[in-house]
Image 1 (cartoon, rainbow, N blue to C red):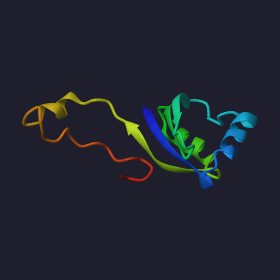
Image 2: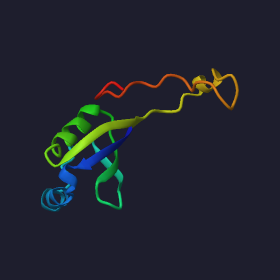
Image 3: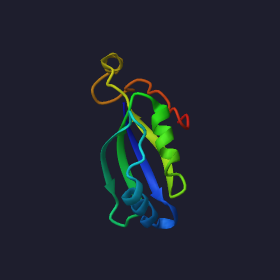
Length: 107
């Protein structure tokens, strides 16, 4: 499953993050794969796409960085479920179906 992890650099300072990455690497447990990342132009936030089959791996990775970043709820990309699209009354409106809540925060 893919996860979009939104991070805010503590005190707006990205240097501790980049120093740790330089010294220790990504600190990802085996089974968690880095896909891509983007940093805002003001260096306040980072958006990372990570992939794993076990959410616990993502939790372990986030714990390795919690002292230098505040992690906004990771967003999971769930597989498209065609049956939900069939429930829509038309192409312009109606629900796409229920999405599972975030396993970390329940939203």
